[in-house]
Amino acid sequence: MKKLKIGSKGERTRDFFLECAARVIAKEGVERANLVRIAKEAGTVSSHISHYFPRKADLILDVVKYVFAKAFSAVGKSKADHPPEKSLLEAIRENYLYFQKYPHHYSVIVLGYYYARIHKELKLFLGEVYFRNIEGTLTTLRKINESAGLPRSELELTRFAEGFVYELEGGLIYGFFSAHQEPVEQFVNNHLEGLQARIRALFQN
Image (tube, rainbow, N blue to C red; front, side, top):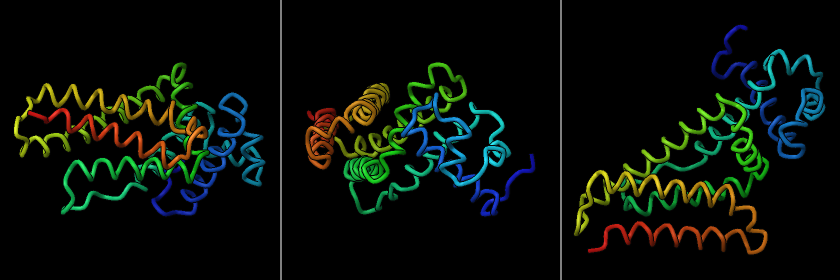
């Protein structure tokens, strides 16, 4: 297949199909999200979809990658004048607000974690995302550590970052949309307060 150029009509069409696939997956689930349903959502024929995504497994992987790319791009860059702790928590808040605005993208990520049990490439990709988040958190912790009253070792920071990201992903995957029991904003505030308390406890004398 001819490689699509950045900004080309082909790439825009591909992204449109991925967005349609995300909506179908969110409504129907991974197993029922076939080319016919996605084509109907896109207002085209299934052969047009299969031109871009010959295999369903590739389509599912690309949809999850597409959603993560959208979510990451929606998170603002940390401001230089913001303390590292505040920048990290603001990025987490923006991430939650993004999924509140686009709940079908949230559904794709949750379903993607379940589907990864039988999809090797998807499992590898989600592992890459996990370690990327750990490294980002670790970078923030190192900055805080520079001015901490009781500096922590690199091993302590790494272990904390791993647990922090694990808890964060758990809050996103299992807690966020069970937040229908309370206002979403309240859930996000409570979750961020808990994460902030954990960070501050790490650096207490």
